[in-house]
Each structure stands twice: as C-alpha cells, then as structure tokens.
Image 1: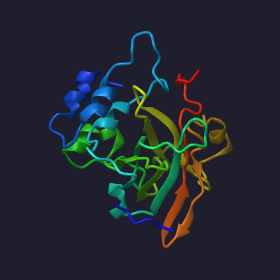
Image 2: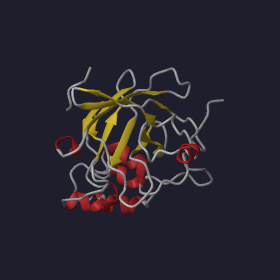
Image 3: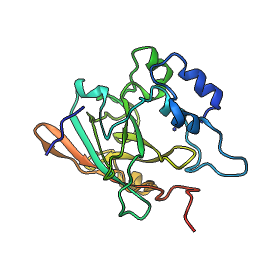
Length: 227
C-alpha cells in the first residue's frame, strides 16, 4: 500500500557556500559534519567527492518521508521505501539521515535557481530523510534517466550520516533490476556498501514501488567496531 507523499571541502568553504541559503549547515549537525577528521585517523568510508553538498540547503527538521522536486515533473513516479538497520542487520536504527540526489527523467542533473547553482553537481532533484523509530524511510520521486552518451545504469545516489559518526559516507547507489545497462560486469564491480542497492520495482496505481534496506557500516572502510 502506498503511503501519501509529503560526496570534502574545508569547513570554511562549506560555511561560505551555505551563506544566504535557506537552512544551510544548521545546528550541531552542520558543525559536526564540517569539522575535519581528527589528525592521524581515517575518514569513515574513505574519500567522498562532493559530500559537502549534503549540508547545503539541509532543512532544520527532517522527516522519515520526503517528496523530491521530481514528483511533479515528467517521468515515471517512484517510491523508494526501506529500513535502516544497525550493523547487526537486525536492530532498526533511528535518527539516521539519508541524503539522496539523482538525474531527472532525461538523465540530466538540471539546475534552475540560485541555490541550485551552489549544488550544481547534484542538480535540483535531491532531498533528505531521517529514519523513524523503526528505522523506516520513504522517498517519493521519479525514476532517474541514464546519463546520455554513457554506459552507467539508471541510479540514485545515497549518503548516510549517522548521529554518532564524525562524517557522512556513501553507500551503493540504488539501481534497478531489469535496466539493460545493469550488466553482469557492472554487477561484479559493486561493493555492496550498506547492502545491495539493486531494487526490484512493482507497479502500484501507476507508481513504481521498490525497497532498499540499509545495514550501517556494512563494507564501509574504517567503520568503527565495538570491542
């Protein structure tokens, strides 16, 4: 049943980028994320190009459900639902922020206004959800198009920001079973970060529905482990 819709730069640069935008780099989250990784330690998840863009435009309040700008644009409507789990793969994890960004139905990261120019590599179809009490989240969007002139499959990028980690990290993109560009060679190169990102869609009332569950820390380099 459908639920109703409702990748690093210095800290100073992040703050400058955020100046004048509605809700950028807010509160303790922004300060924590913008801080450098402690000297002598490794960044959780490794290098993450453009990760700082996650904090530009981030809302003060983030819900477990988000509707992207694409929902009212042309394209196949898509609902991505899932559960975020602790590293044991069993216990639901609440309060985890997921940041997503994607192309439009034509495969383009399109920008339009002043804020979009500051997050141009990610385009305007982007958003945030925070896992609920049972780890649940829902993203209403459209199915992304594949990059024109390239071999990449259709995909949605995901960053994870756990409340007790100093930085965000990326997990495997959401990919779509049945996409002809999702070849066996492409599958072999997947890292299974956070669990498999390949989803199977089914059509419900004109909306493609898919499930992408996430296991925190799974196959994430330098992820802290409890002794």
